[in-house]
Length: 599
Image 1 (cartoon, rainbow, N blue to C red):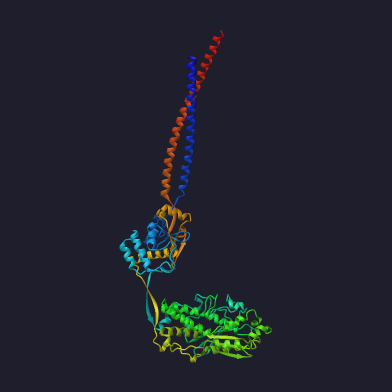
Image 2: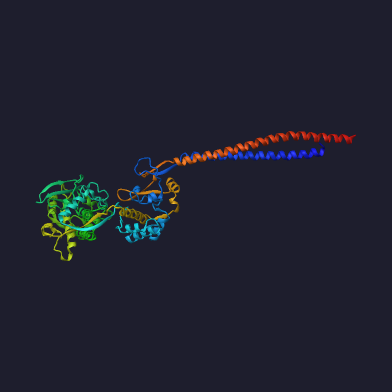
């Protein structure tokens, strides 16, 4: 081989060797990339092994495979007991798919909801829109609209009822009262006859005056006016029902006495006024109790509500003829006189022999007993038994032993006045022959059921039948009520099971279900008794198949790369050997040339 040919061959070998080395390096990088791909495939597979899904286990069998999806929760069926399980966001707004959102929009329901109870017209417009958007058929819409709108379903009721009215006699009313009401301790107010007189417990007025009161009693009389028992220091429950207060067999006279040494009954009178008629900041009153108990038996009849308020006003006028008692009691604020200090000149001038406060007590009382010395409790209780309104005693020597200022009122008589005013309003005030002014009970003309043919109007409710049409109506009425009261938001993706499940798992969506009390409560999917989170075997199987497929592909690619890299290594080795041989030929040729020219 000549020098020129050897040099050309050397350059060719060098270029080819460089190409092979570059190709080998590229294949090495591809192999590293395949290693990363294999790692990702392995990680995906490991994650898939923990895959779970939500199933609807209505019967609690533990082997349900019914997937939790939007339609299952928001379409009436036996699986949701024909009550929507609303999907709600963090603001408790109902999440609607595109169809339901279009229906809400067409019915004019704003996203923030409506204020107050929606009308049946809006409900019917919503049902029409459900048919227009394909949620229900037009025939189903017509059958739903034929059912009375259940405006309380999901808002305190679980079934739809129709309201009617009927008339009952007094005796029938008393039976209803007995069935629907309890004693005073069951009323939704703080006032009961078991009230602890030694602890005002938040009665702002009495606390402000510093008067806890050491005696609050109930005297129990039979119909002949004979006292059967006397309950002192009212720290034990004395359960009295509204029926008891309507009865003449046993009557209850309530007495509030001044604390030991207190110098005036004004504060006790003012306190009794508040307990009977209420005051700002007070949880309830005896009048509130009467309204609640009578109202519970009579039901929601608008004419009854007006009559009950008229009766409450009659009690108020009886107990509060003017504001003088309260004004004078307020004037004793911060005076030690109310606690028995006769050296408090300011309090003395306003109390004790002050004719102004005596006149004020006389004006609000059915009668009064003024005595300089001696106990007056029995006198005031006995007189109150036969009086309409409160009866007051005044003892000028209040700091001496058992001498007490007292104010008493017959709770049975108050209740009879309330009932009389109620009947008076219903029969017509302008033609009234009743009289219940302060004074002797003998001078009063009260309602007497034995000599009256007056009938009481009460509300009746009939539960709507549970056929399919009514079940569907209940479902969409409950959904409609939730949309109107809590507002709504549209999410077109909510029907995608995986998307909805992710919202649940990440705490971005919740499930609101109706409870036995008829109200909807929001909770996590994990707390719903019908929803279980179980291992997603199908997802795991798919992941495993994908893993095996990807693994095989990667391994085949690696084998191909390994073969190519092996061939390149062989070629590079051969080229290296040839390169060295050719290089020696070139070197010897050059040396020979130099020797020729030197010669």
